[in-house]
Length: 270
Image 1 (cartoon, rainbow, N blue to C red):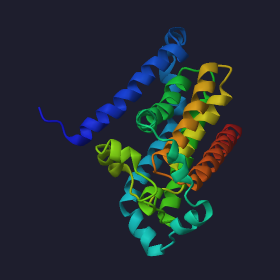
Image 2: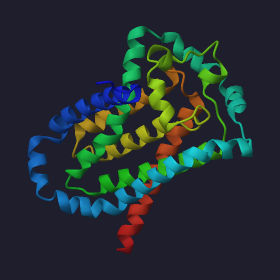
Image 3: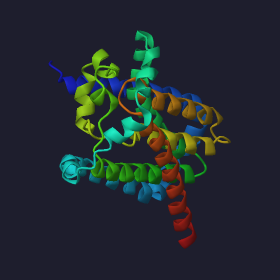
């Protein structure tokens, strides 16, 4: 049976994330909380449905808009690549100066599978939490990330350091694992790097995790560490500028603040 290259890469990425989900669900959520939460699972999903629906809608719009987004970007002509380079220069080149084959392998795995795990585990963990708010906040904040990020991708043309500085910055992810280009090519284009959604969504997950430290103390430690590693990996692998990461952090913080406002407003109105 022949498997397409895309399916092969997806299986590897999602397989790694799935292993993390199983381990974290058993070790962090715990069998006791899982057994207790099963009985009220339907009610929890019903309460969270409006927020999860919002996220789903934004993801659909995001997918559709990315098909024509690059054409709009070039029509507007706001290319900020040169401005970013003028501000930070060859910072990413210096980040890559510490590269080793082992570090590249680890950070590639974190960038791909670790990122998927970081974004998806909160839905499992918070679904079985007594407090419904973290699940709702995660859904709304993720939606805000994608909505604002998509707007920036449409407004601005921005090439990553690996594209602008091919002689100084190596595309470590793609040169080491060329098959991963098939996957990333399905979800993004090389003019959409500002800001880093990998960073903003990871920061969002970390902030919400810290707010749940009383329920999941281990996750409150793991999530920020993993988010920081993802952010560093985006630069180390030559995908994002430091500016993309900085604005990604800002976007993550703003998205959590927007999510908090939306939920509090809806709760007050109710």
